[in-house]
Image 1: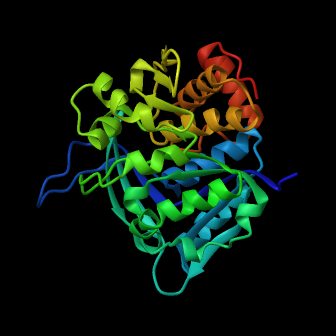
Image 2: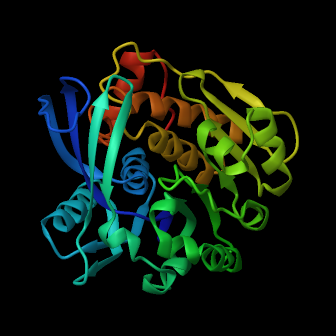
Image 3: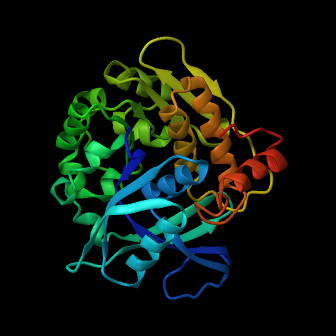
Length: 318
């Protein structure tokens, strides 16, 4: 019996979210925002917090600075019932931060990487690999240290019989240096969105992109396609497109993809069929859009279930 169902490994930062902004930023000019929220940020942390809210025994492994933002991150994770024993505190660098400017269903981000840039495999407590059943990795392009160790990290999980999900997220430098023929066979669930998959494979259509990665998949790819839903691509067999549960009154979309991941992986570690995991992910991604910030809609399990029922007329089976 492992201590944790899921351990998320990756970046940690706060999000300063600005909503109802009076236009786009312009050099030399001032714009007002009607709303502001300082909250737990980072794709990996949002994933972990929401997986824990759904009921998965969840831990986090990452790096923060010894500062106020670091304290906020750690306290927020603990408040969401995420175990932080594997979070490393550094005296050499500050905790990362992202300024998020939300415009309807899109956003513009500016990130200071800070401690997330320095995290290496050697910083992690090796006992985590004996205590967890599944590892989730995200935002590798924002973490050059961890990205350089990704092959060794995946070989470690393989040697321990740990299943893995990976969401590369966007590459801010747009170099897309990701050796998927060698890395993806060690990943059970590959979870990009459509734009990221096209960029990673340097293709111009989704069909071409899927054809490029499918021979190298571990078990499946799950491609998030925004308002069109998601595409489940098993290594072998028929693909499945599941339409999105659309929210007509979106608060913001921050963390919707990460919430999709949390629902999907929650089902996966329970041993549910991939099609059922896809539905769970689609519904948790939709629930995310009903509140501000990536974790606002997941105060607890009961809140998520009620939101799914009241906003979408659906049962969140967790």
